[in-house]
Length: 444
Image 1: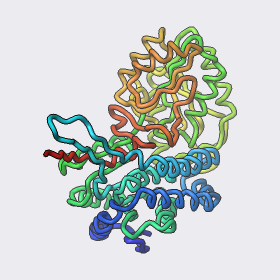
Image 2: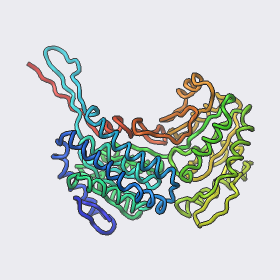
Image 3: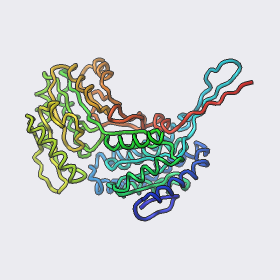
Image 4: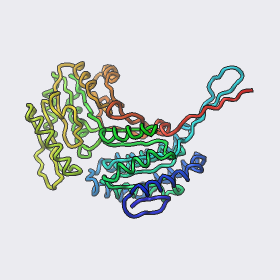
């Protein structure tokens, strides 16, 4: 089901319906962009209230549609989504405030921040509530209109999410919603990104697809915000609290079946503490159960990564839990990872993480700098001062000291570097991504 101009449209999107959605959003832009910030704030807060009212229904759907564990469904997706709506509503006025910088002579220069136009927001399936909201909320807060393209793997959740904006009272065309088959997605994207009314695209998903999104947008001279994959590393120094580090590494590696862009993928354990840390992690592994991946192709990909690592000398540890469905996958630890293994460079995106022993903290940092990704990282140590110095050397959008790599808040900027993308979602940084500046100079 699609939503165009606040009307339900049955079936999947095609090029014609995509053009209709863009034209609807373009028609809504002039009045929406001039609407008072207080009006937009009230609608965002109403959307948050509706999400609270429908909380239990969304939670059940997340568990059914994408096999989401209750903790991730509630704390991250639903509570995080409500916080994102309310925080964006709170900061939108300040985010749009311009300035009067110095100008020469008797002139006065004024810099205005303005909405851009129609924004294409493309959201993934793995955290469909909060990432779906993220694709829309900052852009509409800044006065843009949005064509929201959901995932075919979470169609029900994304439709109900888009419906929240309609039920909250957003005018027709401000948020239009599209779903398509994978086969039709490339033509739909090219149609939308090349339309003159569309001024920017935001995309959350894999690095491979992100390259295509970015390159097609570049040809159209359109900016993009890309939040892509991550090979997220946890550095454990010799003075770390072993039990604390092990618990947070396991949680960060397996939360939501390991299918989070910030999931812990590789642990860099400094040699004096490596074996105690491995022992503690393996103890946790024995209690892990109930993991499911999104599709059979994911199982095949994970199996291939494990087989490659085993053939090159890795020790494979897996939880003893039985596989109860076709999509079940055991929690896995790959011990003795080396740079020659495919797992060293490829994002797992499943309930797997690896451990690589390093002689020093400097060697660990060298591995973080060799990674092409740069989304999230963690450092475990009792010395915060030392951790701060090391964090400055890690090319990642966020570094968490004595915390798991999976962490984001509505008040913080979120995004990556390198192959993890560029641009920032979240709070005022997110709103500013969808604003442009105009300079007006007054002369005598």
